[in-house]
Length: 335
Image (tube, rainbow, N blue to C red; front, side, top):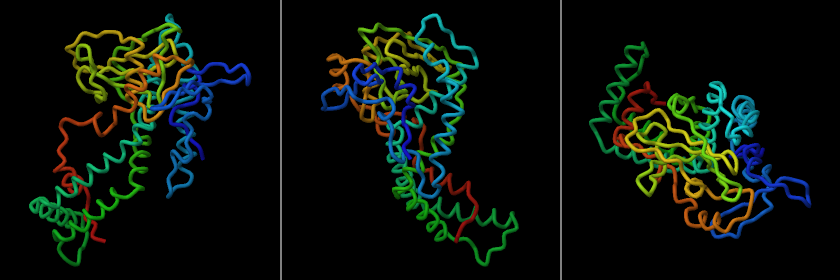
């Protein structure tokens, strides 16, 4: 089954009418390639088996149906109106748009690529845990006490060696190729409504047809403006974070989540938005026209922001405690 990383309806917002075929087309911009004008909104971000699960063959179609029915269709009923400067989102529409943004982030190709560094963190956490004999012994004692209090009869005491076996089982899982796909799918299935985005200040930045916004294959961008430069890839709840999502060549949502702020907010230019789109892109950016300026921006910034590598990194993350906390939350499993 072929699923989309970016909904077709959103891509259509950035398409132009190809007169010879009487169909919609996109200009595609990519690193080291000449702009290409025959990309179709229907296939531009369609990927075979994008949501597939080798264990559950029905999962991909279930995810597609859920995203379409619960998230995409409600937004696509009014998304074209967002380009109208006089249009104002209702509370219901803003709530729907909030969830749409969250899902766009989690289903993007850039987010999927982040599954590998996320799992690398877990493997490093495993190694840190095994190097700490005190933590291993503490988990063994904790599991033994929990088994006793739960009425589970064990034929022997749980030992640190049992904990090592369980930890190694976890590590083998996170080192497997299946784990990357599983991490990506879990991110989509566990995505939750974000109150801070919903309750933030919602703005729309407008531009002209001669200076259009572009859309990348990973279209949700976050940044903090630091004078004349930008710090990309802040978490949605970080201080001073700004969130941007182009929704047509002439309109871009500019959302200020409800977080602490100590900087002056400045409306971004089309060039700044496009640089952010290119930076977050996994591979491609799309536009409704050819522009040498757009191509220059894409070539300068394409794929320089990588989630899990140099973006969306936790400041309070304690790698040494990940496996310890994980195993302390589980019951005994010595099978």
